[in-house]
Amino acid sequence: MHDSPESTRQPASPVPSPGVATPSTGTGAALEKARRDKLDRLVALGIDPWGRRFDGMTSVAIVRAEGESLDTTSETGPAVRVAGRIMLLRSAGSLVFIELHDRTGRIQLMLGKKQVGPDAWKIVDCLDLGDLIGVDGRLGYSKSGEMTIFVSHLEFLTKSLETPPDKYHGLVDTDLRQRMRYLDLIHGEGVRERFVARSKIVETVRRVLTSRGYLEVEGPTLQESAGGAAARPFKTHHNALDMPLVLRIALELHLKRLLVGGMERVFELGRVYRNEGVSPRHNPEFTMLEAYEAYGDYGTMMDLTEAILIEAGQAAGTPMRFEWMGRMIDLTPPFRRAKYDDLLRDVTGCDPTDPASVATAAAAAGVETAGRHPDVVKSDLFEAKVEQTLDGPVFVIDYPASICPLTKRKVGQPHVAERFELYVAGMELANAYTELNDPDLQEQLFRTQLAGLSADESMAQMDTDFIRALRHGMPPAGGLGIGIDRLVMFLTAAPSIRDVILFPIHRPRTGG
RNA sequence: GGGGCCGUAGCUCAGUUGGUUAGAGCAUCGGACUUUUAAUCCGUUGGUCCUGGGUUCGAGUCCCAGCGGCCCCA
Image 1 (cartoon, helix red, strand yellow):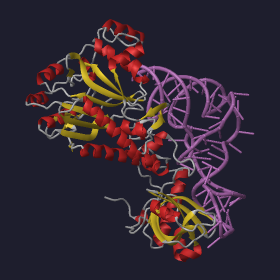
Image 2 (cartoon, protein in one colour; image 1 turned 180 degrees about the vertical axis):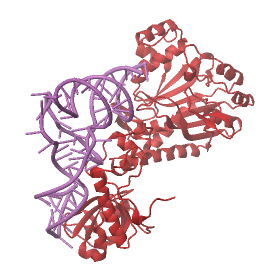
Image 3 (cartoon, protein in one colour; image 1 turned 90 degrees about the horizontal axis):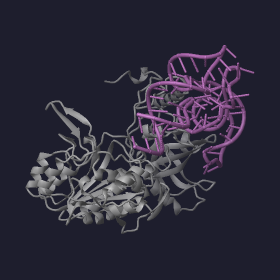
């Protein structure tokens, strides 16, 4: 159901927009009225202010490439047709210069009153910053040497009713940039490029995996219980089945079921949800890659991780050496491999094999030790002191087994798990195991709640169907998880995860 | 959860020790201009100073609470 027809619509009736109120008074309303007046004038001229299909145009990037080879004094190059948004508009009497944006770039247009004729000139009078137009013209160069399309035909495509941000500074407020991402994409320096890079990174991750014989699959996001990681899930409810459900926190347990099912090489690129804090490195919903390869181990996954990082970096245009978060990063493979215990000893000076020594170092670092399992204390100490020192990329390998309930133990070393985490600039980027496939040990570990770990922090969540699957025989395998958002942060040198998520979570805006 | 910083016009920002009617640039509107580059020039319009209390003769400014954001810590 629509509201009032065009002729009786209210001039400044505000449309509720997400997050930000459309002004109903003051300058905002006056600015909108000016645009609606022009819209009315277009309608009076018989022009549809909302446009129609516009075929046969060339992207600005291709037009620009063509223009590079032209005589730079000519105004009469080849005929071109482009469409896009008006970003700048400079009027010199009966001559108007426009900077037009499309997804590939920016190009100058020149419209002269004589050149376009009196009818089109009436349309030019109705143009505002932010409007979408299509033009035909000759490609050439203006007197001041700027590549320019000398317009012979103008087609109005869409009116913009809102004032764009400051044409020089753009949209600066980080809050507004994220709530109104569409504006940020239009006006923000490098914003669109960063999300293009994200798309290329995801595309490359898929290509690397599928070229190695991996099959892309989709597990359930609605689950009875959330397993595969230590995190608090979001709770929801299915009405028709009248059953409580949670949103998945990891992809792991269902992908391993597929290994049992003989799929052998599977991956999923999908959203997971964790009901936890928000920070420059955490968003409650984020994109995760998990990949599992039968008959491999965590070493297989190290090779795969390197391949993904190198190739995705190339796709995103990431240099092999660059600075991020104030640290120098060198992507040259092979990445350093360092044992968990060795790092802990080198950084804290404790003896990692001696719980008392670890506890002393932990206490000195302000880590809670009383009544907690030694490996939980060790893990907290590692987080507190070691992580921040890891410029990386570095594979931290061989973790305390008791904090890795889904991981196979090292041969002859039951207290060491075949696990690695990849760190860059003190941030965890990837996590991989030689997967535990012993159903009896898995069941036992699901029942083991370590002292000092809350249920939220524990991966010990019984999944009896998963155990049953393991009992049918899961091949020995390597498994890998990569946080795609963090990967994009890293490869595009973004300081915050909110810079690489199009619509990060926000509290609703109320009132002022 | 604790601490620090921030919120002024559609956008980007000033606003002194608490003191007259809260300013600028961009944008808008009107005017000049057929080669501009954030065009320029002349004129013009536009405010819930985040919200609510409080102190004060007087609050954008000081205090308290709340809302929203950013950062650091847990």
